[in-house]
Image (tube, rainbow, N blue to C red; front, side):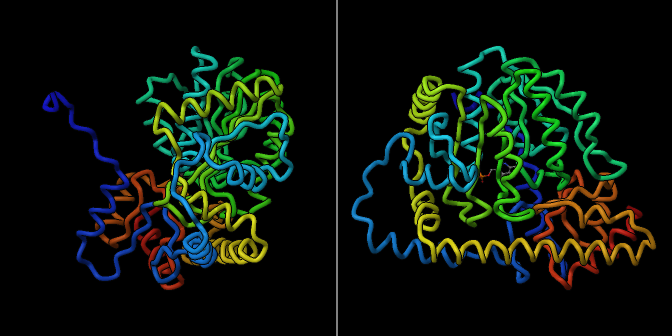
Length: 393
Ligand code: PMP
């Protein structure tokens, strides 16, 4: 039986990691995988996470199953972090296996509710969005998003494309820190997107994987909050992997806002059912950490402060790289790097130029020229800037 299996194409980013490891050149720079690294190249365990784990170790009395939807205290702490004002009469939620699990469950839920739906996704988007939909056999179309000329959002094109969504379709939007481009909508543009969704009756699915990595914990959730307040039905898939630095704990949440309390109850039942079918109970250790931090003033303050350090480190690197490139190129054509937000920027380089950066300068980035800003430090920024100019980007 097993010999009937077809070989799967290896994940491009994971392949890049292997290639990087095998490279013996001194001073090689890894800007590939989407993991925060401090200036020493370490992905640290955050202070508040350590403290919360210690507290959990000291006080936890059982490892018996949680509820199918995860612990209510975790879900309400997360709903508050994401939405600030929680519309309890409209809100259903389940703990999930990371943000990826939340996206998968959201798509399953949408298909259960409306089997004929099409999903509208940005071009480009996080490749896993596409591969999950392909795997599920879910029809999707791409809406234009990235403007190669400005490295910003081609908003007119985006509006035209999402206006084609039909009632009950899903429009997948990145809540902040767009992956892979780093280019984001302004709040005014979000308002226009909301108007289009209102007119079409399509339902937004907001992927919120980087809250706190762009302009701040509240600022990064502002668009999501606006959507939640404005539209009758909203799905939100939030990840704790990045902002709590608990990548391997697989901690996320799916939030569904329904139009009525009855619809909320149906959604809650369907979401718990989906957890049951896919993996039964969601993992709890990461959720316990997050809940412990979010519900304790001192731990929360310390976590928020460390997250701000992380965010400001990345902003500093963005500014430094843009300034360096301004000087070397004698132009402001790389200023988009300072305007982008989150861990990534898409340089807009050709695959050949990306290859050249790798072969000549030992600088690794994803083939579409997405670079992880957090893979840099003060000393490697000038090296990258020089290599970008040398590659003719
Ligand atoms: N959405 C986006 C856009 C992401 O970049 C990621 C992480 N790479 C996720 C969702 C999900 O992250 P995780 O499953 O690790 O929580």
